[in-house]
Amino acid sequence: MESRRTLIIDQLSFLLDELEAQRPWLNRIPSIQLEAKPMETSPSLVEMYAQMARREWEEHVSELLGPIDPFLGNTTLSETIDAIQEGRRQLVEYLQQIAEDDWEAAVSVHGANVSDFSFQITQSDGTFLKMIAERLHESVIKFNS
Image 1 (cartoon, rainbow, N blue to C red):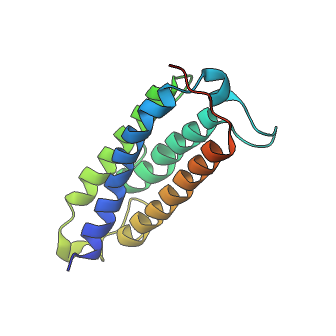
Image 2 (cartoon, rainbow, N blue to C red; image 1 turned 135 degrees about the horizontal axis):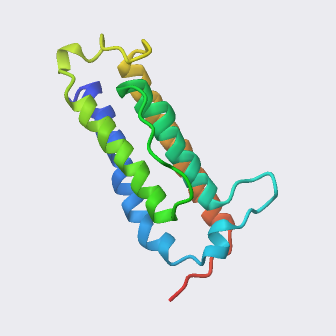
Image 3 (tube, rainbow, N blue to C red; image 1 turned 60 degrees about the horizontal axis):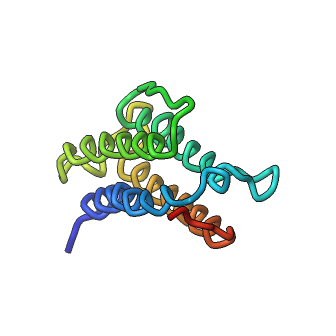
């Protein structure tokens, strides 16, 4: 039976693969549809990915590794996905360095329990991916050739 540590790290790594699988489809969506908001109060797809990148670096990475301030300004969607993936790689590498015996007792930079915090990140990922899937489902996407 796999440990909680292994299961959480595997789930956190899944986001890397999921974003890479989304990339070819996103590249085929016209920019007007990526940037359009279904309602003024709803973020566009581009804004949703930008929010994920900010959360990855400002909340997840900074909690576990300390403050790191990557430039997340005006970038392409592909660069935003790259930024999310780079933050996630750093998180996964850090978590893999924590020994199995130390996993449940490990604390983050600000004192959060690493096991619980990492699990919460997996929940956040699930919410993000669900929002993206719902947006894509609700949109009438016309792919570029």
